[in-house]
Length: 229
Length: 289
Image (spheres, chains in turn cyan, orange):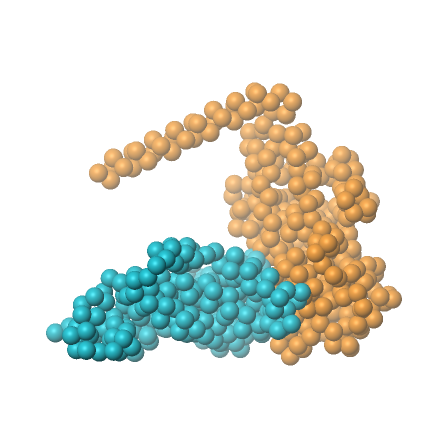
């Protein structure tokens, strides 16, 4: 354990070219999939959280089920779609960072929808009433809801990011863990584990946690809590 | 409060041990055909994916277990991890195929003795049209040179497994492709099955053990293009973990397993393995083991 700590520091400060390349791919993948999932998921979550319509409870149940979609299954699904002889095989996307993002968007979007809708459902009533009082338009009301609850929505976004950066099942299947191309922190850790280099793998895990921590800190710094006075 | 909890926990533990003990006695008396269970009946075998996933162990072990009363717990991983697990005290015996790592394992004092006992040949598989034209090569080194020259895609295990080490040896020291610069050389960092699937997707060449390839052949459009050459010989060894270096090793169990594996009955079973399903033997026994 202590040995792993030491190795983690040595690794980070050795500025190993390959390690930084892996960190780069990891960040590109996680940030892209988080962004896309939030662009799709937050509006849908707001819709689900504020509007009443027929079939809503079925949709909610589906979303909540998909929140627990096993990554391996998402990976397999995307793999079968994009395999050489599959329906999208001609796009030649298998074993690229792009397809890893696609698989992750499938995994993460339900989480964004589910978490944001339950949050908005629980907290938007007073905001909506105020907005109605002010005579704001629908769009402006939605914007107000999002902005009032931004610290909670931030935790939705960060959950999505956390799932993305920590996920190994799907990215391993569709990305292939190719060195200098699609290898990310989690698949690199798997590889080191399979090699039997357990303490080195643990050191990589610590670096992964450190990155996640830095992203979290940066995000909460950018989106400050609304002042309570 | 804490004390009460601790006592309760201890009681639960004791009870469960007692229950386990009673159960084993029952089963041994009930099954009269099975040999009496030895005192320490569990053998932890750490092995590589190629012997387990090829089906060899699932084929051999039931006979061994029935005859001796031992129970073998198989952990399969790449050779690197298989050896590391034994060094960490999580195995009694290893069955691997990477001579150099095996010798290091023994030099460090973890292993008792390296016992090579069977071999097979790696094969080079690739797309049917064989773009690099390796079909008539003398050996793997010549085939690799052609693949490199033509810039055809090649999938490497890249995981320090026995197969990966064998591949690096064929390239020759200092002559290994650079996965960063040579974009035809793909270092997948995955198991044999995953690499074959990837080779299939990318119409690439791949060095593989024959057993894994044959077991997956139906799903792949790859073909065996080269299967001779001394440089593709792949020798498997058994090594018992040294009880003087590692705590808690089941030495009797390890020895019983090794004796059985090197005995006539296992030899016959191994020589027959693969005949029924593929019409070829997948492993050949070493003559002077």
